[in-house]
Image (cartoon, rainbow, N blue to C red; front, side):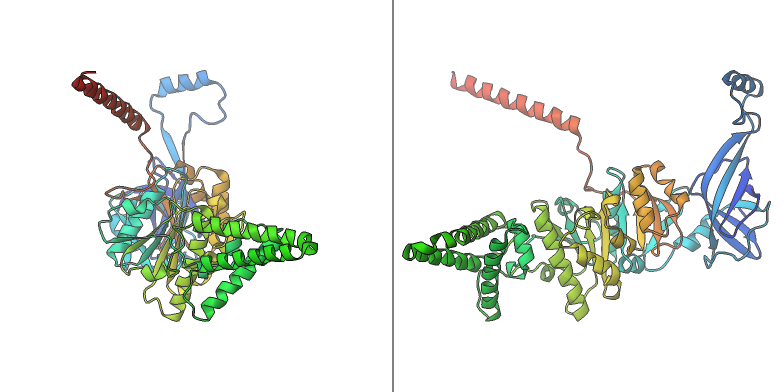
Length: 506
């Protein structure tokens, strides 16, 4: 039996109780209460420390100094609040509240291991207040029920993501990372291999709306849209008939031919020149924008029109789509097409292995405030992906910008430090499992400390995330060191130039 840290006071409830103690306890510490032939697990969610002789009614600071001088180290009391988590074996909330005055004791390592040690799990860290107890999460529940990793900048979000990837590789997991800043390719994962995939897309797979977006054709440009659609339908008919074509080039040739025909008509019939002028200008705009599209996105579109990211996914590896050189519109389209094809092929059985899709900077494309091309498919996977083995992991340092409907479908959360009230409120509104007591702890978390919630863990947990042994993405630059190195390099360059001048005798 472990030491008693206090006793319950006041009216107790089945879900919570208040206790009093002389010993200082930590928020997040696990305790046990033994009654009705049960061992009930609880977590300390709040702690207050006070003195009987120095209470809040004193208004004279001199009086406080005199009391302190007379009594020395003042006798203090600790008042705390416990959230009841359930019977330690079943985690069912007891039907009757604990008796007033009952002993509250610290949970033992063995008792906590009953809760945290589970089969088919990966380690993510240790219990924050009891580092001898490791925290493991259920892989099946994490992947099938989706995950969000949320934190303010610099709180340890990237390290957390890297640790999870490495642990899943040890389980032979198949992962796909949408790497917005092209950082993950430089990481050496200790538990498995990585594969970097170029951000390529087959232009014949694009919709007319996606062409409009990439070509910056606005909703009011009715004539431009008409001629773009004509060119698109022409190229599409060639594909349907089995011709092997360069889709964008075929569209461009159709538009160029149309422009030449109008030029010829204008020369023959002066009377219709003014009528054709407006249409001719629209056609030339489409021709110009198609040419600009081909030049601007030449790295994005496969020259043979055969690009297929999903076919390049290798089972048992972390597959990384490097998106650092791609603009936001293209990122949006790549994510949409890739996820759509993954879900479709998992439904049909063509894609044999489940895939865990990690979306960095998720607020960019799953936005609360604006519509994006990929928003619908991400929301659809959040609702249906568990049935087909397509998991999502949304990583973001701006939770308030994440689409609340999608976030509400994510059943597992790893929340590191969040200070901004709107971020906290948005996460709480989207998650039933984040209580007000836990919400209050978010601003006080240190780097690498997190709250784990959801079906992947048996109980809400305050955890110290393991530190990945190796390079981690998202780390801050050492600005001072880079400044100093640049000056040293400049001075060395100048010295070498002077040495060269001396050598040649100038």
